[in-house]
Image (cartoon, rainbow, N blue to C red; front, side, top):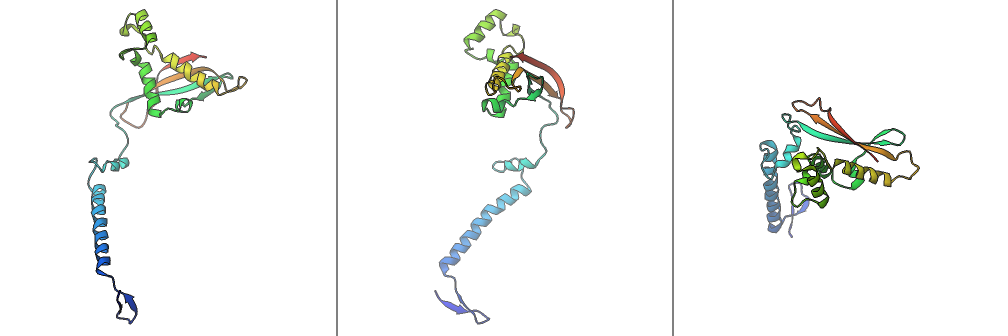
Length: 189
């Protein structure tokens, strides 16, 4: 490497042609990555691979409503407590509430082949159309209550005597009036 003097008389090492090529290559690579990203955030929405920019748009569809559920328990002392089912079963939130929705809609009776206990219940009812709404929901609620109580000592005042599931409805259209009660299922343990 050759040393040269700059206009102030100080020595410096001149860059080799190889170093200059690397510098140019990295500058081009940086621009090649930066320019499309900048353009995506400035102009483009919802086109792969830049759909992550949708995190910054308004949430939810205000035109369609939603039905949702609230799981609670009644302790032996009469206190009402929230029961997060994800903590009871280590399930994912979306899968837990899909399970509840499927139980409410009697979806377990519409799969092929249904469970033998469901076949017996179908035969006794006279078909899927004659089943009561949420025919197996009490079993699910009882199972969650049993799991919760199994983690408590037998003398604990936090043990549950009942589990209840409230169905609520939000009609959409605005970010308000989201807590219209529809119905409640309650199971004694």
